[in-house]
Image 1: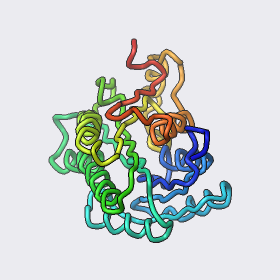
Image 2: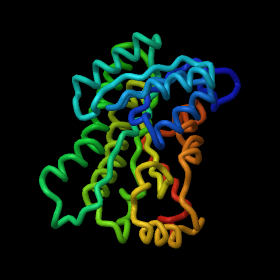
Image 3: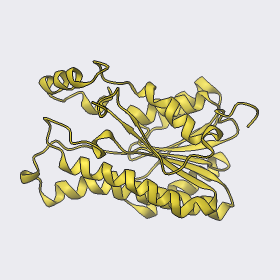
Image 4: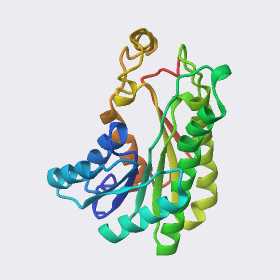
Length: 254
């Protein structure tokens, strides 16, 4: 690793949901710190991997898998391992949101959000931990929770999303305790309102209200999450596990 504790040189990171948004930007940020990149997404993210390989001169590949399918996840991890020669870290980031009142939420609506945001996070973390243990590797996992797991956002109705992200934060703590004996650290980040493709179609009045309520008076950018993920994956956080790092421009503080 050298003398730079924040360096990721000589490591490879698996990133879920890296086709766009936070995952895509963080993938580039980690590559800039020297990490090889494997992107796992339901969509083909080969163009993202190609761009990272060309810009940062690190190994990069893309594998297709649905995070809610544990067999597909395990196969994708094997494929990424074979193509890149090993994996060290996981940025467990895939997620969706549904703005729908709880009274109108159908069983399928609820299951879809929980399956991707919580069950999918567990399936990927479980498969990755099994991989690390089988390979005799130490490694780090960073899950993407949300400030919505700490507070209830308004005015948008999103009980399913809030519940799923609260689950991710506590799942992170549980896995951190269980897997510390295997040399696996597990942490999470909880972003606030971040400018990504996921909010392009959000109502203008909602966006204006959010920005007025954020003490920073603006939403964050995916680039502003790179440092937190780098810290939690790197040796700089070697005594940190089970932590949820809220990155929200002070939104949950006031």
